Length: 294
Length: 317
Image (cartoon, rainbow over the protein chains, first blue to last red):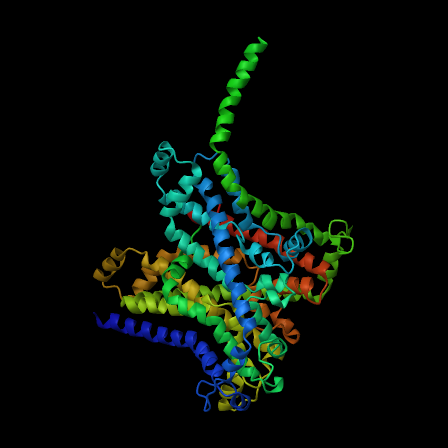
C-alpha cells in the first residue's frame, strides 16, 4: 500500500472513530445515568463517570411495572399485526401491478403512485378517522393509519416482482393448473423473500417507533404503547408516580424520578439494540433501495 | 338480421366476459389495497375543502358553513404564517446543503476504509441514531440540555466558566441544537446512500487514473464526484420537492413542545398539529395544512420536471 493510501486510510479511520464516539456516547450517558444514585444526579447532573452507582431506578420500575409490560404488549401486538397485514395488502396489490397482461395495470399504477405525490395532510386524515370511522381510543387507531402510509412500498414490491419472478415460471404454473392465488402464495412470495424481509423490517421499525398515532388518536393511557408511555414520562415525570409504575410502598416524593426517566428510556431501547446486529444487513439494504425509485 | 346482430353482440361480449373472469382473481387481490388508499389517502384529499369551512363539530364537518377564504385571511394576518414558513424553508434549505456536503465527504472517506469488517462496522454505527425513535432522541437531548441535570449545564459549561443556560426557554440556541440533532440522527442515512453509489463505480476508472499518476484527491475530485453527480442532483431535488414538509417529531419532541421557543422551533407541521389537537384554531390549522399540501405538491412536480430534463431515468414520472 502506498504512503498516500495509508494517509487516507488513517484519516478515514480517525474521522469514523470520532463519528462512532458521537453516535454512541449519548447512549452511554443514558445507560450510566440510569445506574447513578439519584442524589448524585441532583447534585452533579448526568455524568459519564458517576461516583455512586445505584439500581434504585430499576427496582422502582420493576416493583410496579405492570404498565411497562402492558405498553410493551401493546406495541408488540400492534407491530406484529400491522406489519403482517400491511405487507400482505401491499404484496397483494403489487402482484397484479407487476403483471404486464393485467388490463387495469396502468390506471392502477397511477392510482397508487399519486398517493406518494399528494396527500391531504393531518387535519383531513384525522377527521376521516375520527368522524367517519370511530378510531379514537382503539387499537385500530394505532394500526390502520400505518398499514401503507402511501404507495411507496407497493411500487417497490412491484418492481421486484416484475424483475425477479420470471414470467415463464408463472406461465408454466398456470398451465399446470395453479390458480392466481396459488401462484401468488407459493411462487411469487417464495421467490421474493429478500425484498419482503427488507420492507417488513422497515415496517416493523416504523410501527415499533411510532408515537404519532398514539398521540393523535389516543386519550386513554391504558392503550399507550411503549413510545407513547416514554413520551408521556419525559414531559411529565409525575406521570410515573401517579400511574401504577412505582409500588405504593415507595413514597412518591422519594421516587428517583431523574434516574427513573433514564432507566425507562434504557428499557425502551434495549429490544431494538439487541436485535440490531441480526437485522443490520437488511436495514442497510433497505436504506440503499429507499433512495432509488420504486 | 336482428338475429345476426345479437349473434355479433354475443361474439363481442364473450371475450370481454372471459377476460373479466380470467382476471377476476387479480382484481380481488387488488381490492384491499385499493380500498385502503381510497380511505386513507384519497378521502382526506377531498377533505382539504374543510380549509374553506367554518368548522363546527356540533354541526358536523360537511354541514359546517362555508367560510370562503376567511381561514386563510386569519392565518396570513398573524405573524405565525410568516414564522412557520420562514422556519420550515430555512431549516430544510440549510440541512439539504449540509447533509449533501457532509454526506458526500463521509461516504468518500468510508470508501477509503479497505478492511471489510470496519467498513461494515462503521455503517452500522452511523445508522444507529436513525434506528431509534425520536422519543428516545428527545431523552438523549434532555440528558444533555436539562437545566439542573443536563450534561452540558453541569459538566461542559462549568468547565468553560460559563453560566448555566436555560435551553428550553431561549429561542436563540435552537437553530443550532436542532441542526445538531438532525445531523446526528439523519447523517448516517445519506452517507449510506452516497456510499452505495460510490461502491457502484467501476474500479477501472481508478486504475486508469492511477496509471496516469493521479493523486487520491484528484481521483476523488475528477472521478468519484462526477460519477455520483446524478445521485447527488436527484437526492437534492427530491429534498427540495419536500422542502415544505418537515420532520414533525424533531420539531415537536426535541424542544419538548416548549412554548417559549416557538419563534425558532415552530414549523408548518407543528403549527397544524397544535391547531388540531392543542391550543389553537382548527380553521387556521386546516388552512395551513391546505397551504402546505398545495405548495408542496407544486414543488414536487417542479422538482420532478427538472430531474426529467436532466435525466429521464431518474425522474419519478
